[in-house]
Length: 190
Image (cartoon, rainbow, N blue to C red):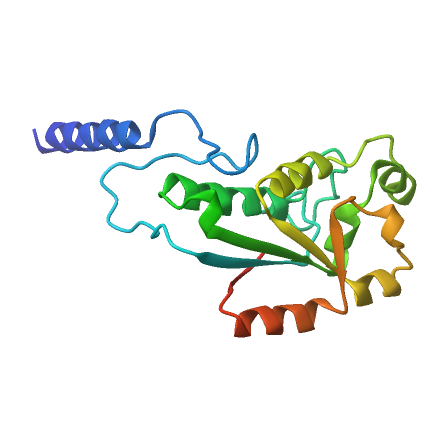
């Protein structure tokens, strides 16, 4: 009788947990990207006050969880998707778009995610348009600033006119991050 009772308890718990997690993905701040879900009975929510977030985007991972896999140039990089999730999680938690001040600082191999379509196709020798551009547009519409490391551009011989149109150029990622940390930004590394 004990195994049957245990099975019933596990079954009921799994139904209750699944019910708390169900629902359609929501996109309260970044439209169409980084969908998140409301969770019932949470005890920790962000406050709807001025929140400064800095995403340190250094890697161009498209195959998250399998670092040995070849990049898939038809997919956006994980760091941009997770940036959209970060904003949407704050939104579903009650933080208004107006209270979010977000900067994505791009350097390292992630700079190639900023290529406009023609440069993306030539650089990666692919017929795919840059799958990151729709996410970058949605982030821009949500008020996110995209700042690229000038040192990374110089090291890779990349010109400003080869990049996403709303990209701003900084002296370096390192100096931008240190400056923004002193201004109270919370740093996320993606």
